[in-house]
Image 1 (cartoon, rainbow over the protein chains, first blue to last red):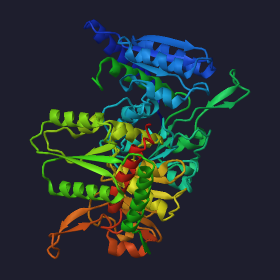
Image 2 (spheres, rainbow over the protein chains, first blue to last red; image 1 turned 90 degrees about the vertical axis):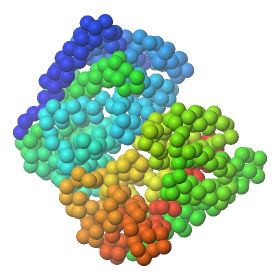
Image 3 (cartoon, rainbow over the protein chains, first blue to last red; image 1 turned 90 degrees about the horizontal axis):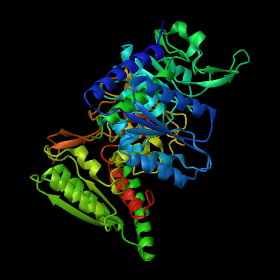
Length: 291
Length: 291
């Protein structure tokens, strides 16, 4: 069994991006510039945004935070998005989710110019990803694909079982795995799936993104399988300083010995997510996808 | 074994649409209006377009054909699309595919205003279908879903195996089958899939859209399965007047006795395709999806 070291790979990807930024700037080009909108004071969101800003700094991007109180109206937020859409200095931007309940998240997502939608949540980017056209692929699926690539996981003709059908992980990663060139046979399971254990047992690659801590047990995993754990549930735990323990969807202790490769939680898929965002911002800055 | 009668269902759906059109017109509303662009003189395309126009007539739609020689340039075609986008009398329109090689099909598809894209091929509609938002769903997947619904096929927790990963059938129908409310467990197989027979044998529902005549054999089908055959290959056949026989992806003779329900070819999925186009045009006329 070998661990898939997301922290290590994420570091390598960041170095590569930093290198490219240096070259761009040396050639007289513009530093990529990411803007992040954050509404309210959710602790999780503030941490995520701070991490994204930190990562921007590490690779030489400019970053701008636009923070609003949770009293901001939908109309006001839409106006802020419009400003970013029209600001040529901003290459890409994201709106940190979740938003307060009085704001329609889907409306906000669709208001973002798809050419600056580095989170890849806009229907145009979702659709282009599905069709197999160049697009901003959303961060977690893109990060998973990068891990599989860097660990040289064979995907052609392999059976990949995705557990979970969310719009931001399950569905897009299923699409990417079945795409020509990747060529996996893909099964998508979810909360309504019967005989889920039996189906998982056939998998060469399991991608668990169901959000249920320790859901995948040893008896559901074939000897030699590759297991990617997307789960990050905060499970209360008195022995940690924070009072919780970040727990994946895979019962790591029992499953790991059966795997050829497995991602830990934390330190697996998590660190790759920000990398994907940085990569998309680099592409946006270079106008590589939409010109 | 019961046949799924696409011709019958298609007739019922058309009657329902005709009824709605009558009500709209009686209330002083506008007749839905579909325009079809056809380039060149491909025999298949001309037949398809004629059938679509005939169907429009049957349900009380207005239809307009814009026929161009295959010498039309991409720029000229884009200008025609722009006219249709801006013409308030046209509710929806399609560009009959394939197009001559000097025209970039994807560029043409993306030039269509997604609010008039009744073929559902624009990335926004593909993306919205995937996310589960109201959208123009492309014709064949929508037709398959309608057949399953009208024959009261149970989908929740059932294992649906889709054979084929095309952008117009395999991928979108997989998405629709796994959507909340439909809730099937979905496996997508394709030309690179190993042990395809074994996987199909697990299916409660098989959707064959691989374009290989008689590909699905009896030994790949579980007793009692529901089989949907999307294939329509013209296989040379001296005994028919046309010199060919429309042949599905399923070896009907051997497979049918094992099925609880099966679509014939022709007369199964085929007739539903035009229905879906009519339905989308009705929705477009009513501004039901995009206002």
